[in-house]
Amino acid sequence: MIRKQPIRTLRSIIAGCFVAALALMPSMSAHATVGPSVVSGAQLAARPLALLASDALDDVDAALLAWDLPAARAAMKRAPDTPQAKVKRGVVKLYEAEYAEAEALLAEVIAAGTLPEGSAALEEATHYLGLSRGAQKALDQAIVIRSEDGNFEAVFASDEDALLAPYLFDAMKDARERIGAIIGVVPAHTVRFEFLDLATKLALVTPLSVENIRTTGTVGVTKYRRVMMISPRIMVYGYGWLDTAVHEYVHYVLTMRTDNLAPVWLQEGLAKLLETRWRRTDPEPLSPTIAYRLHRAIVDDDLVTLSEMYPSVAMLPSAERAALAYAEVETMLGLLHERKGNEGIARLLDKVAAGEDAEAALAHAWGDDFEAFMAEWKRVTKARTASGEDGELSTLEFKDGKPAPEQFGDVFSELGGGVARQHARLGALLQARDHDQAAAAQYEKARGADKRARKDPTLARRLGRLYVDLERFAEAVPLLDIAAGVDPENANLAAAQGRAKLRSGDQDGAALALDRAIRNNPFIPTLHCDLAALAPTEARRLAEQKLCDTKGG
Image: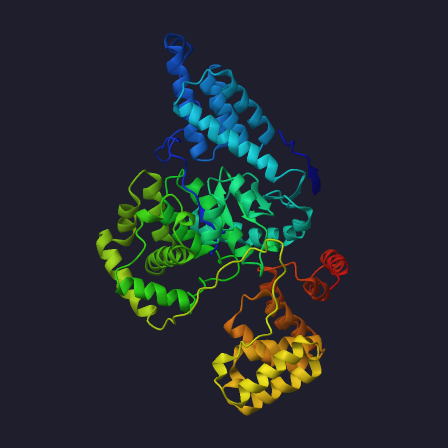
């Protein structure tokens, strides 16, 4: 179902981030009753109005902290009509994604001047008023699409991004079942995803600044009972948006599972550990460059501390420190899951939900004290990351209105200074001038001149993609296999590999490659033409063919 949603005017490495709850939101014990208290009419009549209001609003806070909107609404009905209650009513409306109504309520109560200067209520009203206005500005004339089963809703700030919906819903259908089996929560309500088309828009609807977002490469945030993400369309090379969506969904169900009591490090550790569970049974291994940095951090005693991760990994000073933080907590929770299984995760979350300190809860699930766990984690992780390789971290780049660059310069320095490099450089120059056949001949001479060149992934990628352009698909396949083995998440490479395999008769191999392209950048025009040929249903084939025709693939 697609509809225009007019909203009156009055965008996470890294894989995403979880922003800790505002300090003004009260905490609560797990399994506490967040609905109306059961008291008699006489008791109600005998209690002061201020006390009744305080009790009801505390219940609203507790319900919102646990993302229990029915309980929040029920508690609101018990609250007297006070300025503080109007603030809470506006906050509830924001959690319900009724942004215009939230703005009207909050603006009215602030304008009335009845909230004491410097009070928590005024601070809360001001914060949520900014968010409600930011959401309307970010999502003006948004497109809303709901999954057929009603479990998920995708809201797109730009109709250009609506093509993401079927791939999102397919991934989330698998994630809902598999993550639910581990975390122990399957939401009974519709989970809302908002896709934004500018980094500045992500800043409008979250506590993050544009600087936070750009510094750490944040593309996803889970807060206010919704997932907010940046479209891969506005990134130079796309990004792993489907893994990010699942990463953020893990945050979502963890918040429900623990009544929002899980600290940032626990949230991020489990989200990073489980973000690929929708498509594989074990986590992706750390990249060599991340493994190297984690190894050095353990050896040099330069880890990001758990307390440094608060209130958000997105607020760390660099993308490198953020990547290190993710690697730390992912491998910590991975070790617990490896040794203690789903039962260990359940014991950990039960304790956290009951209000126990998360480090103590992990120690309980581990069966020893926290220091013993950390010593074993360092020992195991130090050994497992010893083969990491130093190198430049891959970072996300925002388009900012610029197309992805095509490099034809000297990218073959790893070949040394011999004949192979000379032929490769000449091939690049010829390709830049659209002399593709001559360029291919020079690349082949480079591969024939040096044994190393025949296995070089840069040269293999360049020549393989050129062969696809020249429709020499069988020759392209082995080259693109070499390149994809080194850079599997490169969407353009995966799309070329998928086309080469499809046109060479390998439909299974093509499907795997095209799936990699989709989960990183579904906006590659040729992608949908090839997906149409592999579509499992006529409806999907027609949809993919329409995108093929529209995008000019």
